Length: 488
Ligand code: NAD
Image 1 (spheres, rainbow, N blue to C red):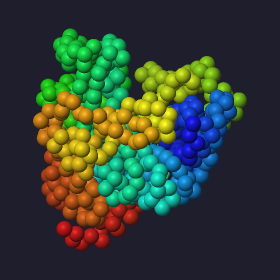
Image 2: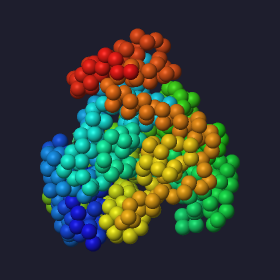
Image 3: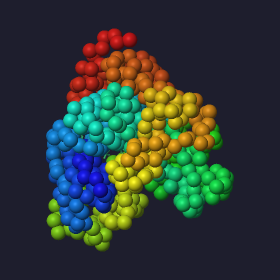
Image 4: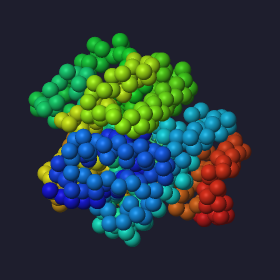
């Protein structure tokens, strides 16, 4: 049994707050531990704290929660720091997207080849990267031995930045690999008989191994594609694992793209809403289109509204599924959104289920609670993935135990096309984003946009960056890049 301090930054996160609170409360090996909830938004913090406190009591768990708006206080003496904060929230992202679109960049300047995920900025992400680094630097001083579980996006750029520039033990976390389970379920396979591996970068992973009962499972995928792909329709905007885009990527690259990787193809699938609908299915055209993202943001708003409602209603029994029925009915949500929320609530409420997030299994394993197989973002030491530099973070299956993280041997290797045509250009984008951020050289940001197929002139590039940096919340970003007359 390990008694630890876990600091949760951005504790009010619509995506992670209750998933992590639920998982932490259910993990018996963490009995006696302290969870420090930290957020700059007092209202969200109060709500999560109130719910965590009630959840612990209802469950009879031996876990203590504290709340604070002070980063230093939360990080001090922590053993684990989980960062889920999105600086400025979705609102800042949407404002920057609007400026991008007004200047001819459909879905904003950060929607880029091999990175179309709509909350994963690699150009206008100064505030977010600066915050990642502030957290890590504070950890060096106040909790030098702690693990940093980097969860906020961009995970690829953020984990690389921290791994290269600080002494903090950083690991990137993403639930995108769950796409493997979607494949297993769609094919009707017994998960215990599947031997699988994925490898690549965050949001850029590929199913390199897929054996069923020891035999080639790709044959089963091929059969599914042959017999079912024509009548495939998405159940919700995130349902893209078997979309025409995924199948097209499989045919071109030679392995199946997993989870968010399907969202991260080229402009071939993403030029405009019509193209997106063709490749990711209607009516949304995938979650990163204007329609899909609206659906997602409405869902997140609904989650926050629900948490507020439940927190205010003191007599509401958190662990009784039936108490949610009336609440859900009153929401008037479209069927597919209601389904999603119900499933999510059930995994948090049920004492036997976990959210599927990997944070608590990781903490349990490194504190001596047993071995776990996880998919994590770690430096490519070894190398784990051939042909990728060792100072680049890769997303691979690992075994975690009290001695640390042990990446699996990637076998069979990724195809040459995946490494050379897909991972290399994605890696170059990460290198450019970090180079721009670390040197403050605006020319690097300009160069990223000069290579963008939507760019018609250098004036357009300068104008869109000027306008983004002139937004009030980007004052520091502007100063950072203005002071760089020439940093080449
Ligand atoms: P959200 O806006 O609902 O939550 C972010 C929280 O961070 C808010 O409560 C906000 O108040 C807080 N915050 C903002 N600035 C802060 C600061 N300086 N200090 C402390 N807290 C601060 O966002 P969300 O939709 O829940 O997403 C959160 C992050 O997680 C995003 O970066 C998103 O892209 C990422 N994400 C990651 C995965 C993954 O698997 N790794 C999956 C989904 C989302």
